[in-house]
Length: 529
Image (cartoon, rainbow, N blue to C red):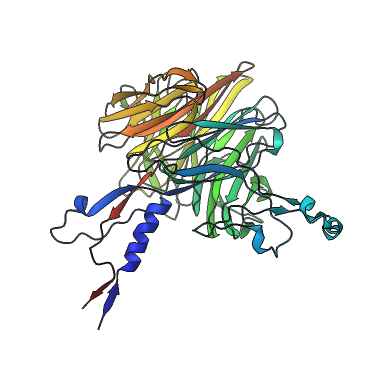
């Protein structure tokens, strides 16, 4: 007798709805309508990680959290961001040291300071233990953004969890203003979900750059990761890049120049997590061109889009890496407001397998909105890509980075937008698309407003944003794709300080706020032959 137990399938379906990081698809049975066989449900739990914002005493950091209203998500739930506690030297622990959630994560674990054991012996043990940090930010309700702030060099990495109605599409923006010193300028990053692999084309170990890979571990066991570097000649020899341990509930910034003695301007970092999972981001600080965060490129693919290059960019440098042994030949195009054009003299780019290639595109946008579209020649291998953008001239220049990103399949949000400092770029490289943009109420009040746009095939549009009535504070932008056409989006924030045009750009990949769950048969126990 053969028995096939279906309870495992039911459990997997439930897990997909809880985590928000999985979509289940079963093989189509003859005559089955898959649209009717799957239900689209809101995710019920989401995790986000924010790196430590800055080592500068002059840093001023704002966190902004937002969850769009999602049909069917309900009104219950919660979300919060907490400082990642430092690892205790007391590894024994006690049962009272932590509270564990349903998925095994520790949510309340004091950080023990064991530097003075005599006090503990004298009954002052409570003085030597730091209780779990209070939430840095606690969202109020879906549809309403909320902010929190920190200053100086002591801002910690943050671990965030959202459940119930707060989980679908939850996003957090970390924006830091540094007024002077190495890496001065406006630095921004969207806090990321934990994962096991990341690609960062565009890092550097050159003398004028100080680049850190920040790895944050949200879980209650240590993670182990490898950091690999690839330059113009292939893999770069590293001294301590393998088997790096990131302790539980902690964050580690790794200075790239300590991994290798080679000085190269254009490198690609590959973070591969052997055990556990982490959030990863690269902080790039330049002696002359300010600083910003590099978010990870989307997964290797033959066709890539880098959306929303600022129209007043004075220099654009494209960095591409081809994983594996196969070479890639790419057609380079710019999606402008009037259609796809080919930059003069930069029609194609050849990338050797396992090597990083870079090309200067100058002021490729020439005063108009633009996005780079990379498409493969015959049989081209998959690649990862990103650009470094410079605004300003002379000693008043600032830089930022834009990675290749995934499309807005259904919906994406970005937060921390001001009334006059925000530009939203939308790109439809393959076919005309219709997009709805909603501006939320502000953190201090206001009424949400929406507007619908048509983005013509092959174009990029810097759209005129809807303005929330009575806006106070900063607000969120939610982009909804109303068609089946791929749409790519990015947001640029600007903040001029002392004549230096500070800016930062964040892409808007799909928020994965819903998951397709196959409908189960009525009998979920045993299928018996």
